[in-house]
Length: 528
Image (cartoon, rainbow, N blue to C red; front, top):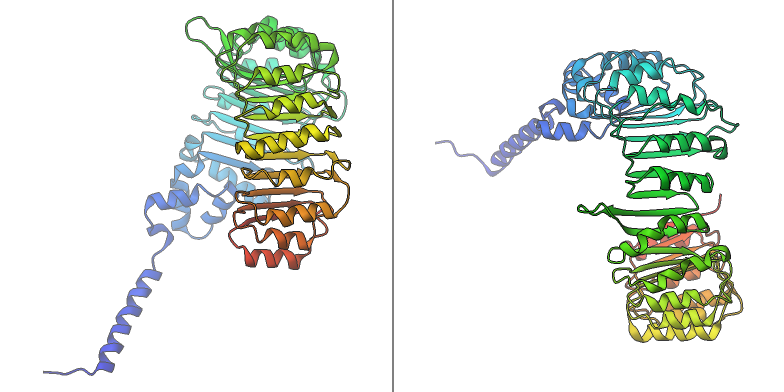
C-alpha cells in the first residue's frame, strides 16, 4: 500500500482544480446555450454584428444563423468600402432579410450618396413591418421608391424625416404602401417648401389610422394637410403642428373617428369610443388659447363626465366665456387640473372651477403671473391634493399662500411641490413655510428668485430634519454651494438629488457627498 503525504495530496488536488479551471476557461462563445447567444447578439447593432462575424469562421456562421439578431436592425450611412461590401453580403442572405421586422436607416447630411437606400432597394424583405428613414436629403426619389416597393406588402409603419426643400409627394407613398397603418412625415427644411398641387393627392390606405405631420413652414402646407385629412376618414390618432384655425375645422369635418388628437399650442385630447354608440369619451383634454378648439371639443365634454381624468384650460380673455359650461358638469373622475393665463388678478373662474372639483389630486398653474388670493383659498380647501406646480408666478398674495401651506401642513396629503421660474423676492417666508409640510416627498425649485442667498441655505439646513423628503431638484440657483450639499447629505430619507446648472458646487464637495451617501442617486450638471 502506498501512503501519500499531505503535501502530495494537496498538490494533486491543486492540479485537478487547475485542470478544471482551464476547462471552464476554454468554453467558447459558440458553445454557449443558444438562448444566451441570442440575448447577446440582439444587444448589438449591425456594425457590431459585422465585426463579430470577422472574428473567425465559426463566429461568422453563428451570427448569420441567429435570425433573431436581425429582427430589429439599424443601418447608419457611411463606413468604409469594406463595411459596405460586408453589409451587402449580409443583406444578400435570404435568411437575414426574412428575419428583419423593423429597419431603421439613419442618413448623414454630409454624405449624399444613395448607397444605403440602394442596399434596401436591391432586395426584398418579406416580413418587414416598420421602416424609419431619417435625415433623407436626396434631391430625387430614385432610391426611395424602389425601397418602398420591396416592402409594400408587409409595411405598416413608415417614418420619413427630411431636410430637403421639396416635399415627398404623399400620392407616391400612399399608392405604393397600400397597407400602411402609421405614417409620420417630418419636414425640416430651412427654406420655403415646394408643394405639389393638392389635386395630385390620392386616397390614402384605408387602414391608415395614425398620422403625424410636422412642417417647419407650416402655413405653406396648409392646403396639403387639409386635403390629406379629407382623404383620411379612418384616422384614430392625429398629430399636427399649429397651422391655424382652418385646420381645426378640417379635422372636425373629416376626421370623425379620432380618439387622440394633438395640435401643437392649440388642442390636445385622448379618449376611447364607446362600443355601442361610438361616442368619444375623453380621458385627457388640454385646450390653450383658441376659440375654435373649445367649439370643437364642447360636444365631448358632457358625454365625458364619467371618464375625464385630466384637464388643462387656457384662460385667454377672448375664450373665457366659453368655459362657463364646465361649472355645470360634474366630473367625479377628474383628478388633474392645469390652468394657464397671463393674468388671473381679476378672474374668479379659476376659484370657481377648483371649488367645483373637490377630488383634485394634481394642480398646475402655468404662466400665471398673478394669482388672486381667493384661488389659493380654494386650493387650501382641497383635501386630496398630492402635487402642486407653479410656473412663472411673480405676484402672489403672501397671506393666502401662507394659509394654504399651513393648511397642507395639517392635512398631510401634499407630497410634491414644484416651483419653476417664480419670483419670491418679496416673500421671504415661503421656504420656511414649505419645509413645515411634513408630508412632502418631492421638492423641485428651478430658476426662482429669492430676496437673498441665505434663504436657500437656511431652507436646506431645516431640510436635514425633514421626515419624508426623498427627491430634491435644484436648477440654476446660485445660492446652492458646497455647504448646501453638505447639509443635504445629512437628510436620511433622501434617495435622489439633482443639481442642474450649478456652477458653485465643487468636485470635492460632490465626491464627499458620494462617499458619505453612496446610495443616493446624485446628478450634477453645469452650464456649458
